[in-house]
Length: 142
Picture 1 (spheres, rainbow, N blue to C red):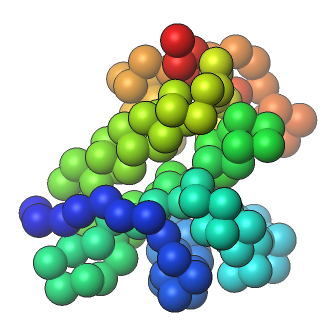
Picture 2: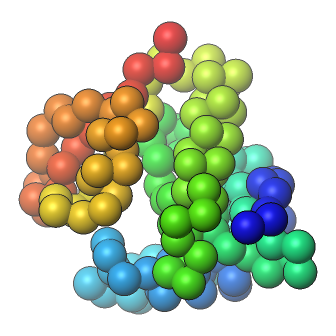
Picture 3: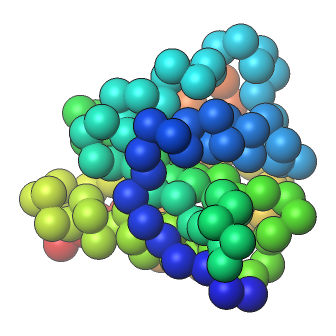
């Protein structure tokens, strides 16, 4: 599968949100909790990336919240899973966070999901649970 990673722009936001709503795992229990406007500050801050195909379609996206050193999102459209897009987005956000001088990143994800295994395989370590019962992961960057 041919794709490339690039910085997200404001034009990408509606499609990023559509990808977020299309996922099969880690679905939003309340889709109104995250709106298209929720992405804006990350895109403007330069901490959001999209994977685009040869046809310029957005295949996935990743976002880091630099303020709290957390991964706000990393999602691949369900029709495009398994092609290395998630790994490429993951590596992009890690590289960016390291260049920003962050020492550690954290994230949460639902237990028993492919995402849980993805992060374990990528070197993240479980450090506890969130109040919502999700697994908390951390990844040292230094």
